[in-house]
Length: 329
Image (cartoon, rainbow, N blue to C red; front, side, top):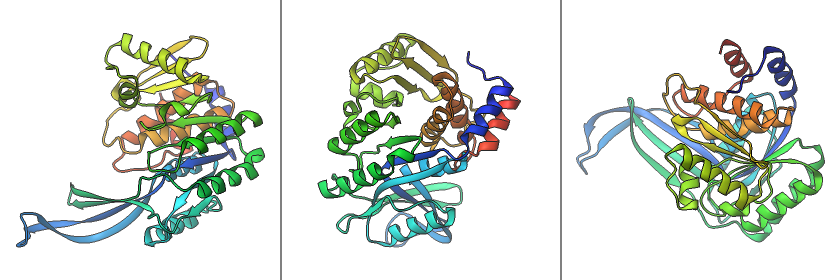
């Protein structure tokens, strides 16, 4: 079992402040239309939702950047927006939080990814997605890479946050990892199915159980399955560390030298798992940049993921809340 003593926790918390972390990946807007449904439409057998409130939140890689901010860091989002209303909403959200927007590229032929949830009372009625999943142009990819290259020396780390929405192409992945290796920068990855094995030689690779099982072609159920999956990923990716998230089963941490630890889930009462993966990768990266070892960082990330699972909706974890909860634990 991994525990962090109070003096060490205080030291790490202090070191979180001011860490500069780039987040390269698929930026999204989460929209919520909330109201009440008291009747059925005469046009079709569906409820009529009378909207009483409309609000917007960061989604995707932007939610990772938001977690970095609330953990005391300085996020630098790198991604693509469309020339549309959702893109303007995204920029307004950035402005409210004073997050740097210089790494965002506009593609006129591409919409800003927005996921709209219609909620009647407490019932989620429907989700409407507007997005384009084809890869960004080579020129756009190079603009993103050149921007990263221009600021790499001032960064403490970079997160590659992939939702398979087209930003992280094979070329951009390879160039980014090569640059970070040359500069000795921390690289953490939250992958999806496509390009899974392109993330070679990174500091930490963090898939969930389903992603790893689908790509490896195995069912990850037993302890033996978990160990096998972790060892296979270390071998195929040449990663320094693999952090396999297991939902209610907690996480499994594998090191390149063969060390392995399991950590149980920290959620006391699960209300909503939305955004937990974003919180885990953000906390993990912040902790590593603050000087934590992989087990300390994984402990903090696991705990942070548990905290946000106790909240309804996608919310970031806050630095004081995280470390106060650890102290109570």
